[in-house]
Length: 309
Image (cartoon, rainbow, N blue to C red):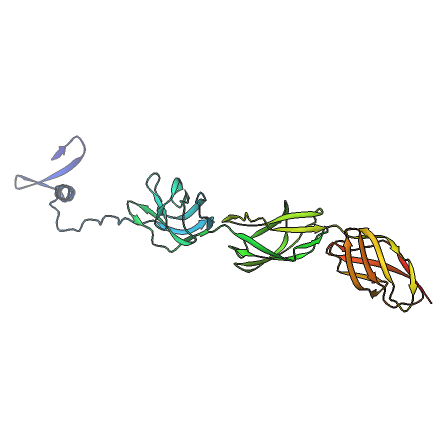
C-alpha cells in the first residue's frame, strides 16, 4: 500500500495482513529518536562537544618602548586577544589611560607617571591577563654638567666631550644653541661626545635630548671668531731672535701660540682682545709671516716680520 504525509512519502509492506514499515522508514525513525533524546538530555552516552577554552591576551611588542617619568607617552601594543571596550593595560603596577582598540592584535595606551627603569606591560580582558615579559622603560630627564673643550671656532668640527647623566645609547641627540651636533657617540650613561656644528661668535647652550626629555642645565660652549693680525711693532729685528713684538689685530683673546714663519715665538702674553706680545724666535734673513692661534683658529692675514742679517 502507499502511505502519504505532508513532508514525505514511504512504502509500507503488508505481511499476513499486517503492515510493516520499510527500511527507509526504520532509518528515519531511528535518527528521529536519537535526535529527540539528545535534545532532551537523554542521549545514548555520547560525549558532548567540549566548550572552547577562554584564551588570555598576549603582548608581544610595544612602540614606543621608552618615555619620560611624567607619563603621557602614547604606546602601540601588539599582541593577540584584545577586546574592543574590554581591555585594560598596566605599566608595571600603574594603569594606562586612553585605551584605543585598533584590532584584536593592536591597541594603544597612554603611559601613567612612573619611576626610572623598566616595567612590564600587561593587557587584561575577561579571559585573563597576559604573561609575556615585554617592557616599557621610564627614562629620567638627562643633565649636562661639563664640557671639554668649552670653546672652539665658529666653523664646525670641534669634538666636545659632554659629561652629565641620563644619556641613552643610540637615542641621545645634542644641540649647540639651536643647531644639532653631529657624530654623537655614546660612551656611557654619564658621557657622550658630539661634534659642533657651525655657529656664530658667542656662547651657545648645550642640551642633550632622549625619550626622557631635554636637559635644562645652562652649560655653554663658546664659539670664537678666528683671530686676525693687522699690524706689528716693530716690524723687523735680528736673525738671532729676541725681539719683543707687539701684535695688533682682533679676536686675540685666549691666544695659545704665535709663529714667525714656521717657528714658534716665546713669552706669548695676551694684553687684550686686540693686542698680544711675543718674543721673536731665531730666523733667517727675509720676511716671515706672523700668525696667531686661538680657540677660534689661526689668523690668515699676511702680515710679516723682517729678519735682518
